[in-house]
Length: 424
Image (tube, rainbow, N blue to C red):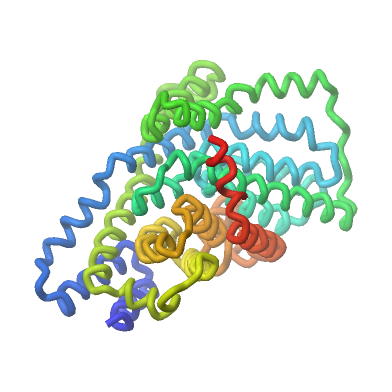
């Protein structure tokens, strides 16, 4: 049964059909041929059920806020702010890129938005400093992975939806791994610049630093408002998403005036298209998840892979492997929707903290987003920078190695994820 469903889905993918079609087709094959007692109408019912949860309202709102910020000049302000303090160091522009991706990730929650918003200005600066284009692009797409870990993370919201974990706790837990990735990338940037003799730039004056800090101050307040508001009880994560849209509009329309009111409908249309793609995947994933659970496929899979009494570490490493491979081929949202319900009960039974599990899962989703053959950030960069697939992936191996090392550290030392949550 499992092989038949897999074959149907692979054939449809090879034919070039969007991911929602194989998911729905897999569910239909199960219902019609293996679960005859079920009414096929349950597929439509489950698809609707998948997009009903109130928590999902945060997704389009965070996407809309990110699009407003990306259309405005927020990313440039963040880049200039970071560059004023670290740009003069050896590898300073590469460090600036990684830091700007981290900061913009705390605004957008989307790896692809970060590739576009930060990558567009920083790629040209890196090329002028003497970096190879493949190295510059590799840094941009891998540093953008941090956006999936730093709050507000869309991946965390989707995981919370299917696992009943706290969105607020997940947001906080992603900060430690995100910062650790940045540290690894910053050290590598310094070593790389020293080896390849990348020149340094003139150190910014303190007056210049103060001026750039002043310009970046309001965008830097964005993550503090969201995380602080959630943890002080001022608003829920979904309400925080609404606040983020209002904050973005006030910044870009009223204060900075980089966007006119007549531009908002166009930005909203773009956000709506991305949201519709996400919600269709969520709906199809819910239907497929229901069908495989009714067929007890997850139980068969976990018993075969994990055995009767797996340890917490065994579960986490197996989960990491499955999600890493899955996200190399399929959109991370789909993988989170399908695999999380399969592994979450087994992980909980083995003593894994649900929030730590969520961080491990979303980390692998972030890693897979920039990993060949089908990482979504690779194709985003290819389109944005007008470069071939091979040109985009040529410089990625060192970053993939570093991300794998950090992933192992996060699995082995859960305090990397949970120490801030416990402090709160």
